[in-house]
Image 1 (spheres, each protein chain N blue to C red):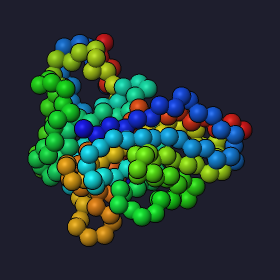
Image 2: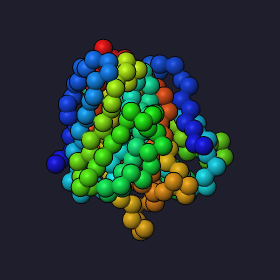
Image 3: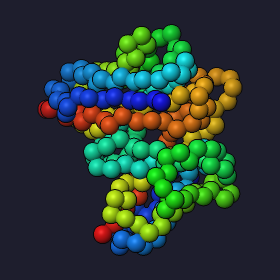
Image 4: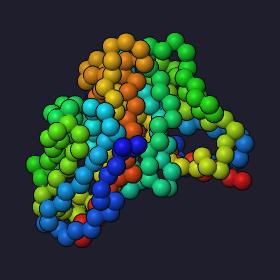
Length: 118
Length: 121
């Protein structure tokens, strides 16, 4: 069964600095997708970045990049040049593609709270 | 519509009552998902529809929970005999179906609605 682990306590970062949010996962499926979502206090889940298990390069989307280490089963999110608006909960999620299909559910971790200090 | 719409945004009910939560997905999205999120936790999967049929209902906690999507668009999550433990935010998401080519198989992004906060007194 797939499992996502996010164990960091609340994270704090100074505005304009970079921060790494950790995510490890467990799956026996050889093909899977990894997602990061942001949930501000308003409650809406916002998609940030995607990494496929067979992608040769780490995904990047603007200030977001994913440090994908397949052998270690980790998919850490790196946010560069933090902004006050980055303060939110961040969730790592995974989809098992072969076992459950390309449109199947995402399984989420418990999330990490990030607070950006001015 | 432009985004995923969920109604009501807030629902307060008494223990034992019946509740319906509605989700209107993004136009053209064939996949629709229901999640439940308790305070301080990640979203917990309930059920996923592909078109009109439930492709995966393994997350429904018990037979008090039921969901339908009769015309392959709007979906309703139904909770019978509500209990205090059902209090949570119920999130709906939709996505376009994956195609065989391009986009990276499995990359289908779920777009979430704002959620329906259910409080059972």
